[in-house]
Length: 88
Image (cartoon, rainbow, N blue to C red; front, top):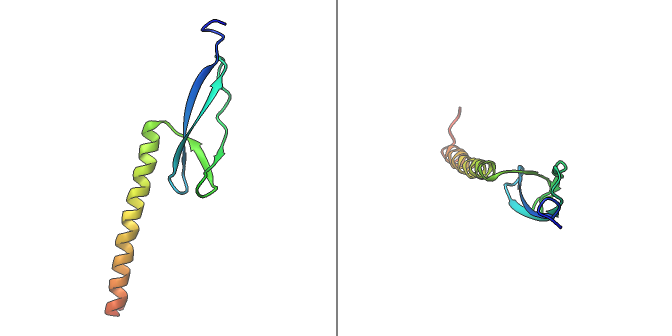
């Protein structure tokens, strides 16, 4: 075998756009143009996970972190409203 025909170990990162879980899969691939990456199912929530590079993975993780923070603020304000029995 030569470097042109040797298989290459390729690691691909995936991120679930439903729950934010990230995971990586490694496979041996021939040195040919790769096939389109498959759509995978998230091991946590069973929704579709998509191929992501490092920057995309961090953007999605940050989105979920911010979404959680926003939901905490909204829940807190809603509870405060109900406790005061304010009317809109």
